[in-house]
Image (cartoon, rainbow, N blue to C red; front, side, top):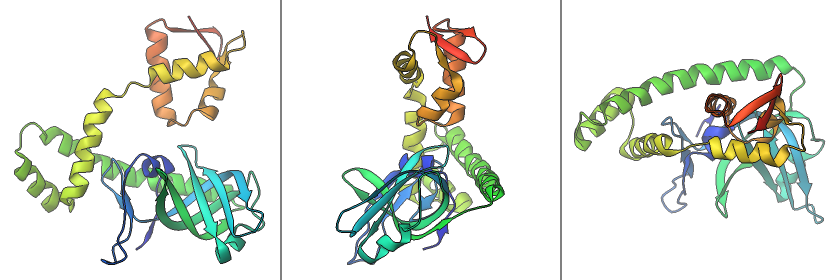
Length: 239
């Protein structure tokens, strides 16, 4: 399976499907944008590292600015993480697995990146692909109420190459997105961080696991509703 260039947010918020050794079927995640991902090619910053005492297990937590995921290495593969330190920008390639409800990367390749431009180019590459995926999702969304289930399955398969399993994940995510309200989560985070003088907006971006556009939208709504105010520029406080 090819290693796909994706955002961590899409992987950890997608739906995981376990593989089968008997059927030679790999495990994979289907994202809310309809992408089926079995192996990933990520560029992210190392924010945590752990190595067991017996050197048979090691893991790093990596953050690409959209979410955090753990990359694990076992036995002989532990050497992949030798020389990798906190703050390093790395490329991580590996298969997606799940343990105790956590989706992680079973590392195959881990390499440091010294050219920051490489990260910028990757983000642009992913955004261009997301734009195309979103067109398909938006079209499906517009047809949900006008087509029967069978008609929609056939349409999604013929136009976008989307199988029934993927279509179901996309439809479910469209329904969930209508219901999720992130404003209470943002309010709670600001209350927790505020020591009396308000909280810098940049701090909220740093500590929240939500995408930047989601945070911005929630903050703007809270300001408009008068639930937040700015005692000074770029600082927020709960009313």
